[in-house]
Length: 110
Image 1: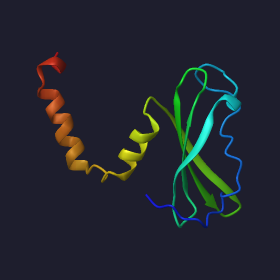
Image 2 (image 1 turned 120 degrees about the horizontal axis):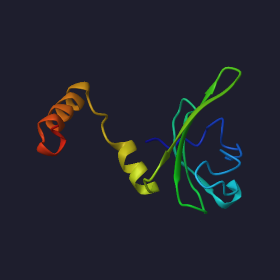
Image 3 (image 1 turned 30 degrees about the vertical axis):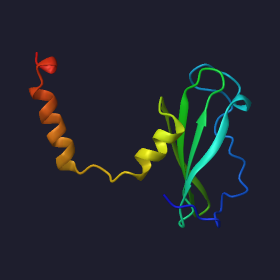
């Protein structure tokens, strides 16, 4: 993770959604925190609904003429998101090994 003080979103109002997608609580009950910023102007934001407690992870990037973003709902806590963001990404081989292990596990056999 980087924490760059020069970021095109530094004065941006981090209102991600107007209502929680799970419980429809007002977004004013959620607090948005910037978890990461990079020199390229991308951000990782985290929000937790004050109504139902669901988390939202959003990644935003400045692009020519605007902004690009993607968000996912999560049950992860903020510290868990930070932890996983700092980990080395899995390789394709590691994912395939995990799938093979699942297929051989007796619980998943048909």
